[in-house]
Length: 382
Image 1 (cartoon, one colour):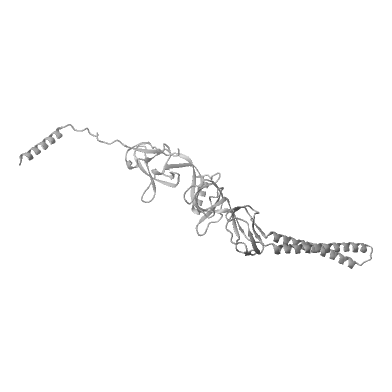
Image 2 (cartoon, rainbow, N blue to C red; image 1 turned 60 degrees about the horizontal axis):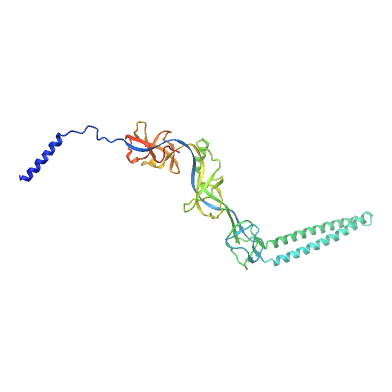
């Protein structure tokens, strides 16, 4: 063995002897203290239960403009896409033939009135002669009949004149409602007919505006049972909020108007209708939106932060609780919905229990931990 290798072994053996003879560390000095975990204390609070449902917008009022008389369009008197007021003239149909018809009807009325005047004068004379027995009863009866016929002629002529006057009025096509008018389907020179299927233009009132949403019948029944059983109280006024198709919130708040009395056989849903102010015309008919409806108020709701809830392999909700012995306990719970950043817990937790929401990676079921108030909250519901 070489001298250098001998010296190396000698030094190593000396170090080992010194280590073995040195003082030993006291037992338990290396045990780590319990890990700190942030907890929230379970409490009860009043919570408004909401549901988010898909929906589409529809006009508050919609009118399809059609001609009520036939003729040639002479003028279009509106700007497409503009606001129009009820009673505003939209089109002018050629009135020449209707003016002539009115003149003819008025002339017939004048003739009928003249005939009535003549028949009345003759009847007066016959009556005076009849009193002195100069004429027969037959002549008197004929005079009464002629007067009644003349009076009927006047009424018929008046009706014909009024009908001609109405037809002439209808040559001016007026807006039936106020709103935004769409594109025109006809131009000057087009021939239109009374009662035609083609729409001349469409007017839609956009302020306010309807939002029709669909709710599953199962969800509706669940909410009604909860309200009936006293678990939820019905909201005093059903308010509705909207999220637009780009996920931005709509600033105006709506009110629920009514729900359909029937269930769709194809989708198993019930249609609910809400009414929203739309002063800036931001909402247009046919837009897809998501509506947040107030379903009821839970007076004794247990809410815990979402980060305190995990899912097991079967999809069930679980949470970690610090029990009275300061040990971590895995607790299965039943959740129903989220309210903001919290879960609504239906079963599995009691008031006063401590739910771990911070330091979850240090909390293992059965381990002893030190519970401290979490930074996010000191009590659920505050």
